[in-house]
Image (cartoon, rainbow, N blue to C red; front, top):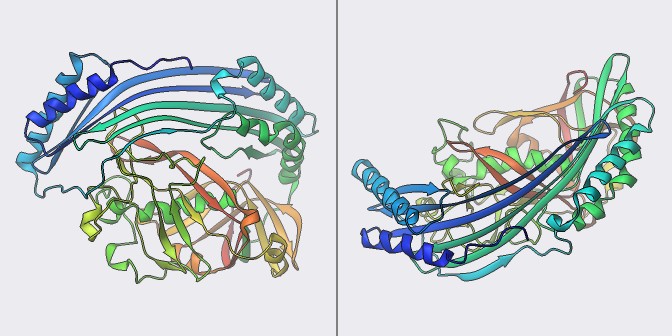
Length: 488
């Protein structure tokens, strides 16, 4: 490992929390974070950039008379830590003097633990030359396909070493990894461009994730599909049955289920920036979100997934719970502050900050679609006229997460139960509950794949959240498809 931990971290934490307790605050915590990341990008058969960053700092939260204060610094010293603690206390006191309602934290047991991402190969120990030659070889393979005019490939890895200590007595140490890789191919035909991409899921593992993805074996397929896509006929607008792959579903679930199930959003806390939610608190337990085939489960305990960090930034243990059960909306993503507002006695452990200088906020959990019993062939067999969609494309969704449209990365026509030829320019649109109610089958567990996001935007100032959404293929009936933009 490149960086060594400051040996006095516990000392620094103690300095901060002593100040907080002496102020008469009811709660305080400190997060000390040391992050290291590496991004390698290639474009058109050359290495475009190699970027390594290291970022260290700490953030202190104080709850004083029911109001929050937060302050942070990148200077880890015995002089700076108490100064920042005083600042957080001062901000909390100022907030308390004007707060209209008091924050009350849901109870959580005291935890003392160490969480380490399991890894077979440390990504930061793999030579840069090995990584750059993988990217160069991948692009070389892509360009062997006639008709390919552009290529790109990248690898990304991050290690977060963190210490969380609270005035309640919790002490949590973390050594977390995350990594991903991708490449794409762009073809040109008749003045049109089309791209096809390959992404590893973004997961908490070692470099074995990249080795198992086998870029060189996938490159010819991706390149030939880019060429087929650019020459494919456009889609006639109309109603189609859709069969969606797990990667595509990860974005659909993220936008139409993940965000509306964030309780702070449902309570209107984010109304001025990232919108609200149609899943208002009166709907919990009573609202039909989808068909009986739709079971959306939050699971922040599944190994390798992005939100499975052992504990969140409130010091709450990660959990598993239902968001939608047999089509009925039943649960939210919460933190210690908002859980009590819907009568829950414990947080769901979904409070996360994207760095030492950010305040933790409610983030989407690892929400996944539970597998059904069908095979992919069975899903296709019962479709007379439909479209099979793989991967992510463009999307838009309204502030309440109600009306949406989604594109994808690759599309095939389904005719009389068989996937036939590729088509292009597919965008489908709908209303969230109508769309999920049109789901009439989900493939079995053998089809389940996990795809994650590290760029989920929320908050003011903006933060990027990390979560994984797993699914098997699913079928949706009579969905409205409109023609997309050329080259989308």
